[in-house]
Length: 199
Image (cartoon, rainbow, N blue to C red; front, side, top):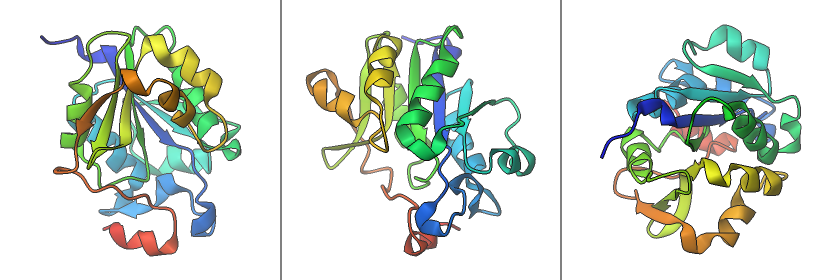
C-alpha cells in the first residue's frame, strides 16, 4: 500500500546552540563542505519526505543565509535555549493544518543515520495512530515517527532536553520498533571529540 507523499512530513530539529562545542550552532557545522543542516534535510528527502519542516534556533538568521534549504518550511523557535522539547513542540505546531498525518522526527546532529534507516521507519506508518521508532540492537533511538493522533500528547509532555522520551516511555507497548543497526551508526555531535565524525 502506498500513501500520498506529503502525509508523512519530515520534521528536523536543528535549533541547538552547541553549548559543549564552544557555542557553535549544530546546524552550521561543516559536513562534506556544506552546513550539517543541509545534509540532514537531504537524508529526509532521500527517504521519501517531500514535505520537510526545519526548526531553527541558535543563529537562525545565519542558517537561513548560509544553508541551501529551498523548499523547506523554516520554523523559528525563539525558546530554543529551553531545550529540545520546545523545538519538538514548535515543530509539531507548525504541521497543524498542513494535511500531514504523521511527523518523522530526526535530529540534525546524527549524521550517521542515513536515508535507509529513515526510510525503514517511514515505511512503518499505517495511520494517524502510528508510533514507529528506529532501534539499534533492540534499543530505541532516532528517528521516530509520530502519527498525528499523538502530537498533542507529545507536545504536552515535551520539556527540557528530554523531547518525547516521557511520552514514548508511557506508550512503549504501542511503539513499532524497526531495527536499523545494520544500516546506520548512532552517535551525536555533542563534543569536540565528536567532530571527528564529520567529513
